[in-house]
Structures are given as structure tokens and as C-alpha cells.
Amino acid sequence: MIPCSSADPAVFRVVIPARYDSTRLPGKVLCPLAGRPMLQWVHQRASAAGAREVLIAADDERIAATARRFGAQVELTAREHASGSDRIAEVARRRQWASRDIVVNLQADEPLMRPVLITQVAELLAAHPRADIATLAAPLEAAGELHDPNVVKVVCALDGSALYFSRAAIPCERDAGESPGAGTARRHLGLYAYRVEALLRFTTLPPGPLEQHEKLEQLRALEHGLTIQVAEASARPGRDVNTPADVARASAELKSELAC
Image 1 (tube, rainbow, N blue to C red):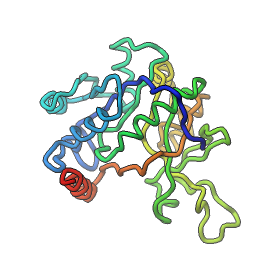
Image 2 (image 1 turned 45 degrees about the vertical axis):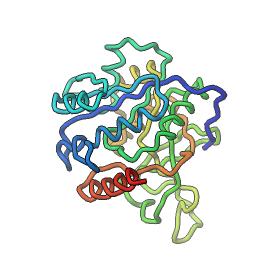
Image 3 (image 1 turned 60 degrees about the vertical axis):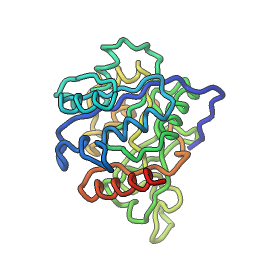
């Protein structure tokens, strides 16, 4: 993976797709963390990244009302969207954004996301005009993550373009003994920058067999020939929130941040 380098700051938007239903934590984007809704923390992260515009694409009036109370721009979108990308595409069409504009997809369960990473992924795409999508990766933080199917791994070509994403342990170093992939495996971060034209195309494509097998939406882009540029994250990424234990950990970390 190659670093991002761009002489001028990228011009980009951030859209935070937020749905109310969640399998493990219904309404989790409104869950209070250190005295604020999770969604407000995510919005603050996006607002600190230097974006031209930050919007929340909500599927429920409860989310929209909460977002308006803390001053966010909100677009109510269809409830039936299968993914956050589909929700953002609806907003892009409605607002008629230009085809080469850059939009960052920041997930609504990322209250610990570093603003510098949001900026980085947008600048990565701006610096690679032939790429359709950009994303980031980071070294694995624990040995067990290599074989954890909830930790998505990515392998790249020498120019930094993604070759494959998997829940499996990739790359497998045949001669590495007890630690296949040690030192070379990278964890994919669920943070994307799209050119609007690529986003609109991507969301009209049918899922391919690899996406259906791995349950990873980004594989659809690769299966249909879109280019995903990958760079090493310039800062240690925060964790997303999926379980009650994650809520407690994130709340404690945010309280510490407020106390500093």
C-alpha cells in the first residue's frame, strides 16, 4: 500500500448513513455515549475533517429529529435500502452532485473515528484520478484478529490498489509457522471515499458470487472492475460500536477525551 500525497486539500463531502434498526443493538446510533447520542459524536468527527458539507442520511424520523437538535443537516431516505452506500446514492441523486465530486461514507457507529482519517481517505481518492473508490487499512492489533471473521483483511497490488478483501486469514505465509500473515496482514477500515459517478454505478450493480460468499459489499466493486485505492491509515483508528461492551468502552474513552 502506498501513502496518500496531494499538494492541495481535497474538496469533499461526508455523508453519514444512519438506520434505526440494528440486529444487535436496535437504535444504537442514538445510544448515549458520555452524555451525547452516538450519532452526534460521529457528526462532530466528520465536521472536524474539513469537509465542504456534512449530512446525515437517515431512515427514521427519530434519527432525523435527534440530528436536527444538535444542528446537523439531514436527508430522510428510503427505509428499504440494503446498505449505507445505497442511502448515500439516493442523497447524491436528489442533490444532483457532479459526477467527479468526492463523497466520504462515514458509518454512524464510528464515534471514535479520527478526523484525520476522514480527510486522508478523501485526499487519497483526489490524488488518484483513475481510482473509483478509496479506503484505508491498518496493521492487525492482536494475533487473534488474523483468524477473526469479524476483522476484514485486505491485500493489495504494488501500486496500492485492492486485490481482495476477506474475512479469512490473508495473506497466508506458507513458511511462517505459527503466525501466517504476521507483519504483512492488514485490517480493512470501513471508511470509503467515492467519486459520485462510481457510487451511482456501484449501487446499480448486482452482487457477485464473491460478495454473496463473504458478505462484503466492497467485493462487488472489484468483481465488476472498479478500482479501489488503499493506503495505510495515518493514525491509529478507533473501534466501531456493535455490542453493549463496545458501548461501555467507547463511552469511557469519550469521557476521558472530554476531561482532557
